[in-house]
Image 1 (cartoon, rainbow, N blue to C red):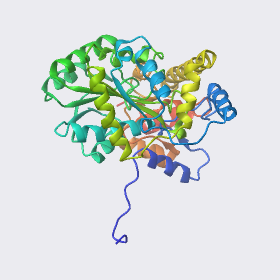
Image 2: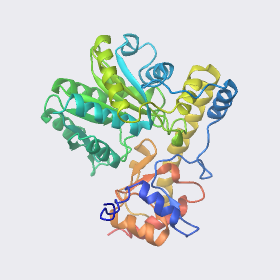
Image 3: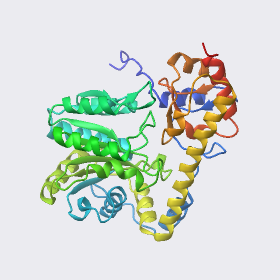
Length: 400
């Protein structure tokens, strides 16, 4: 029975990482997978995480199952981090939530929830979006369509076409938005544009779903929640999928959260039961360790200050590297204006490189970039940035 089953195609991003590992060239550079690296090219363990883990070891907590939606204290700190401790959506008790295995797990539980409870809804995704968004919702059986987001001519947000697309979406559909640090473009709406988007979504009767995977990596921890909070009006409904892979460096611990904001606390109770049902049929209950770290750090004043400083350091390095990359491209004579890279936010840059150019960079120079031209800026270091810029100069060629 199994002999006739063909091999599945490699994942567009993780498949590149596998190919990178298999590449024997010593000069190889991986700018594809979304993992933060410091100036030495290493992915650090945050100091606040080290301290929290030591405390958890010393506390000798048991290893029994968590409840289906995870630990209540974790849900509480996640909600306060996203919305603010005194925000009405938090104090009113109208959020149904669950600790999930990473942000990807949150998205999949959201997909299962939508398929079971809003079976006629289509989910609308930005063009472009993170490639795995399509996989996740297709696997959950949720139909998907796309809306305009990126203006290639200006390397900015296509706010006009985006708002026009929202006006045409059928009421009752779901719109997926990136809470900050849009992946792959790095282009985020301004606070005023977020207000316009939120108003258009409410007027059209859509359910917003925000993928919130990079809080703290754009402008600041509170500042990066401006889009999410633009939707958080009294009586509003929304879905938020959070991840702590990047801002806590907990990639392999798979720490995420699903929050569904409901009209009131009674509705939240019913929605919570539906979330629990979806989880029980999937992974039953979540892993404990990563969430315990997040909970420990966010509840301790000193550890939280350390975490905020470490997030600021990562954010500053990414933004500084953007400027250094633009300077290096200019110094190497790459034709065109790449200043837009400094206006992008988060770990990724939509570089404008074509699929063919990306293939040449990989084959001739051992530089691995996603086929869309998305570059992980955090993968650039003082040791490799000039080599990357020089290779791009050769591949792009002289100005016509």
